Image 1 (cartoon, rainbow, N blue to C red):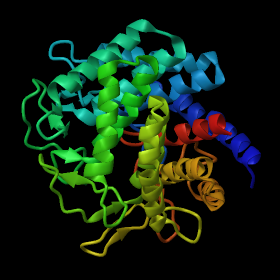
Image 2: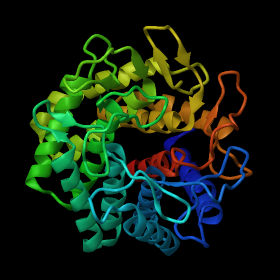
Image 3: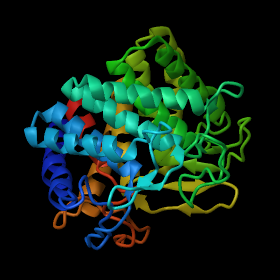
Length: 394
């Protein structure tokens, strides 16, 4: 394996395996937009709800593919996603965006989840970057202003996890039933850093720059576990938490997204202070690497239990993050780790017959067909982004 081979293979997988699946299997010609779910056995569920995160990630993926490859079919898919989001997900009365709509496009879960608003900004700002569409940029800016007005906690410096449709406190703030009910989470802050970086590229606003700097500080001063180098996950309003879960995929993803934010800001003094911390977070993530080249999901240091399944998204972030380590720190072994992880993905996660990727490969080596091929959390974003990051970096 070498860089040229990996780049070529990823371009082929991006177009022939990932994007083709979403264009051929997920377009809802009857009710608009995209279907909400295809299960792990490739069965379509046409009446499934349509999630905000799924649709925002579809928008991002096709907008980025159009920007990188220039194919008109990708612009058309991105425009389809953009139009559906603006028509059905944006809350025209209260601002923000709904968590989900039903298959007919009617509001279903109307809470304002900061994580989902971040992904809306991510998709819309990438569409504006790819097409120059000023109206779409303004839609992204309005969502940014909604987050800042309603979800930013100036007293404790951080972003509230979720609110009601009317932007009032909500009891259950969890992203999913697998999460703790914390009012501050690493995952949401990571996916505010990510879209704010994307928005800053096309709208270098002074307040937005300040917020990016604040977010970098939250990662290095609040989320970082100084004893382990890992990023801790769940906190209360005052940033108190148990600090007992190590999420290896989030660690390595955060390392390269922090690098990206620093590069976009262009402040060399801030970068020189922060990159040693980025390196430490990335090296901590290596504790999740296995002998077969893959990275496991997470471990609970309090219970001693680990989720050793090889989740699709974790491998994607591992590959980007290891290439980032090679590029920014000269770590040749990190590049070899990226190669080994890519070989694992090709052998165990890509569905070469049915298209797209499996959710995960089990610890015992069997494919996981219980979880979705496409759905609220299974989107074309982690794997398409991995391919395009490698294609643009090399």
